Length: 254
Image 1 (cartoon, rainbow, N blue to C red):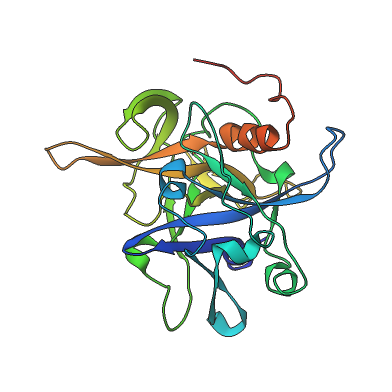
Image 2 (cartoon, rainbow, N blue to C red):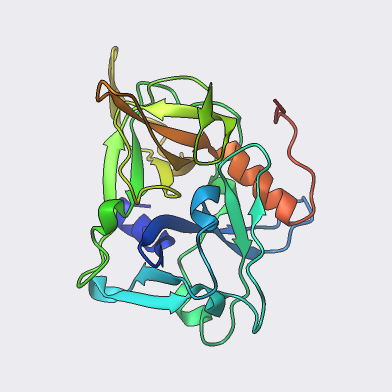
């Protein structure tokens, strides 16, 4: 998949003067007893300001923005019922598509299997790409999600987050985030990349992987800024919790 292909999997989420990014995932049957189920994934601190009347905008042909209400992705009369990870900035919402919304949503879902399963940070030499809507850019007129390439700058860190009012596990990128990227996916593409040993060519069959979800920016009064990212392991566990399944082996509690 190219980044253009992936751009249809992200959504601009807006409620009043607040906004963020979300993306769509479908849980596939992988021997864990999970039927195929569509989800909207975003940061918990974004989910908390969304309502049924919040707008969800996606990219249609010729970069035309198509907006629907969040409640239109649920059953009639159903209230928002987010599954929020108890220890991280992740929220997932089960969707219930009908004959009106299914045509719009077809082809927009990332497979659960593309979410990295290890509770770890990506290798530092290999770039990742953040996708979303910083400062609401690309959301009117022509619809064009913004991408930003960065490199992981740490292993896993325990950092206190004012947004979720608790300490949580993140890794950081060597570039800051921008308001509006929160909740957006962080992709690792299978293409070649430069390392200290020269140009590295990953296995050609390696898929695009979602390695995390944008939490926000860590900054101080010197002006230094880094983007904090929630590892995808926590997204996987939140989806499993929403399905009533146990977290996968290898997850750690803190």
